[in-house]
Amino acid sequence: MDKPVTPRVLIIAGSDSSGGAGIQADVKTCAAFGVYSMTVVTAVTAQNTLGVQKVEAMPADLVEAQMRSVLTDIGADVIKIGMLANADIIKTVAQVITELAEDIPVVLDPVLVSTSGDALLENPAVEALKEHLLPLADVITPNSIEAHVLTGLTVEDVEGMTRAGEALLELGAFGALMKGGHVEGKNIIDVLVTPEGNQIMTATRIHSRHTHGTGCTLASAMAALLAGGMPIELAVQEAREYVFEAIRTAPKLGKGNGPLNHGLNMGQAEKPAVANNPFAALKDLKN
Image 1 (cartoon, rainbow, N blue to C red):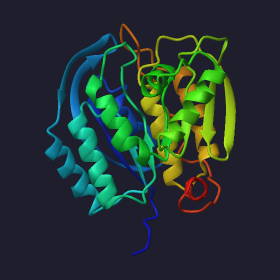
Image 2 (image 1 turned 90 degrees about the vertical axis):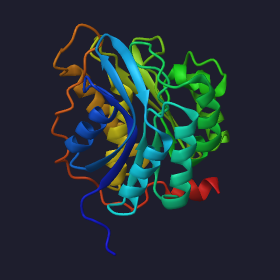
Image 3 (image 1 turned 60 degrees about the vertical axis):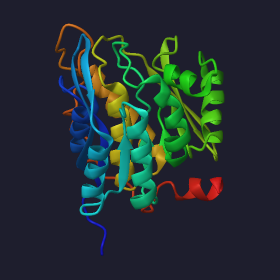
Image 4 (image 1 turned 120 degrees about the vertical axis):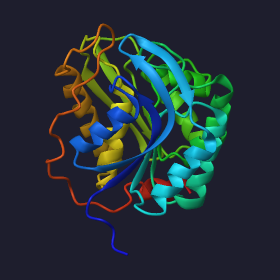
């Protein structure tokens, strides 16, 4: 069967009732890049720009059923994973990927806390994520707080980000985009750590409270670009530019951490022709 012309991203994440993060942000971001998105809902949250008021995790068998329904019919070019809520869901997601989607690149955003500081992953589930999902990730996208939780290392500067990224590769990930938004400094510095080397990227810090869903949005933009065949280095750069503009042009909604402007028309840009699997070289190196 010929590969569909329209790139496909399967989103596995929680629902954000405010529309700024989670599955809602993921779907909007994929649409901005002209990519078709499907969803597996792992949890339903009651939240707004001020915080998370309630979280209800889906039964693990319902998560499994959603994944199987989509993967055995429409399929996917990239799987983007966000909020997973608990260990049972993590193990289930890993099991289905191993069984049905072993060759599909995975972008793992390890959602541990919300922008407002509310916990979104139960503590025992962190070890399950490290054991079962991290080895399946083609790229993981932790901020400095998440990187510290996952590796136990201090992440306060570029050196710390790089060490933590290398530790994540040792735990099984093929690549790690270490996000520096929570690291002190005039500029935001991100580090892409891969077996081929490290790439340091700098951007002017925008001082704004309208940053709800930045992590979800960045990971989804990367997933959308990778689904279209863009290599990881270019996908990271273009995704970062998209998030920068989405923050700069935020609609300024809500009384707290407001959402981004996901409606940027980024999907019309011509993309370079590249191999179907942008991670093939990384996997060959890793193996």
